[in-house]
Image 1: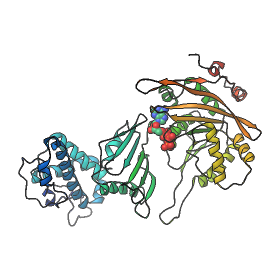
Image 2: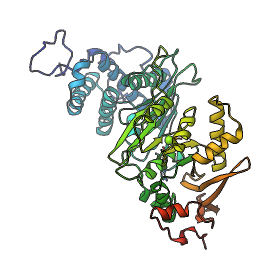
Image 3: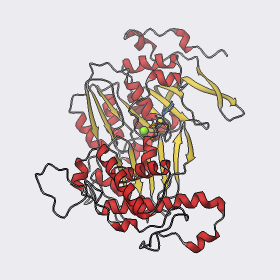
Image 4: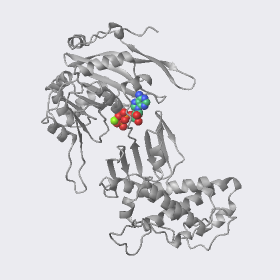
Length: 490
Ligand SMILES: Nc1ncnc2c1ncn2[C@@H]1O[C@H](COP(=O)(O)OP(=O)(O)OP(=O)(O)O)[C@@H](O)[C@H]1O
Ligand SMILES: [Mg+2]
């Protein structure tokens, strides 16, 4: 038998030999060969795994490559099933990646030999890697998770996986074998974080071990197969300098933002889905002094603050019995008792808005959050709506006055149609005029056209207004050169 780690009927406890990982039975050998040239051993494989000879005979030569790929897929599934069926889980936990890799390599090589299947070197390497990913990792998702250029992974059922690169969505040729395969990977992900997803509990939001944000919805709610969305966690968060270099905003805007954050203005980053809100918030936080105590509250911990004194909190949904939920609002209320200098809420989307505004108004100035909105004005309406939906009965004017005294700055992040992400506006809230919150835009991105290949042409410009906070900046020692407030001259 080939496996050093094979599951033996009685594994002795306390022996020095490593516990077996898996045992692949001879059954595995019962597969059709990859090429017809090789004489097939007598097949004991279930009919649904065996390639259909009648169909195969009708296939054009140009489909040969596709067929070969499909067969390779079948072989992989059979080998994988065997591995899983016979896995010694405790040994697997203890095994190093290298051990597992060489183990799989040995098993594959022996099993292929028994099947009489000939693979070229690339196919063999891919098969080994795929099996390793299946056993240890997240199957087909693993390559996409490792791909540094991918930001988001979006699965629409087993046969359709999109990724987002450079702000653009594109279809990949990565697929799952079928819905069961996809469900198995989803189950693997969610059970690793102590959650469950099934027909009665058909969606889940979680954070993967590497920090990536994970959401899945399974049938019957997901009509055409499970839907999965992954926002990959980037260890190297984009810093202010990177964002300036990428053209997300200008050095002048960065100077202004530095003054705003350092002088403890309350800042809201507004933007659409995936527009770069969290990235902007994270970058802005770098302007906070290292001696301040910062508390962060998020549904999925994504922020990575550079300061020494940071307390991180992550809210928690209810468990399967509907118990144990800890909302962002709970965290926020508690945070107020934890002597914070600043509070950062990853995204304000519900009733926590009340406590956030109160915190901003009562001595925790310099706090920051993000909201989902398409402009500064729209952002204020969102805040009003959230307050109304939290069941607070207050006249609109009082709500607005609360917002206008809490929030000083709204920074708008946008993903433009060419995929680029930019800070399209920086708007100051200056107070109330009658029943209306007054605001003034200080910087904006001005679009002027499109290149033939659909890239946006435009520039950032100051609007020419004098900052409402000029005096404050000066008092805190930030003497911003007045040129940064002069409009773009072309
Ligand atoms: N200016 C930028 N240039 C290039 N990539 C960026 C920029 N800003 C953000 N990104 C990348 O875009 C992706 C989405 O960013 P981010 O998570 O900040 O968006 P978001 O608005 O918070 O999304 P969501 O609405 O899902 O919370 C991330 O992978 C991030 O690294
Ligand atoms: Mg975000």
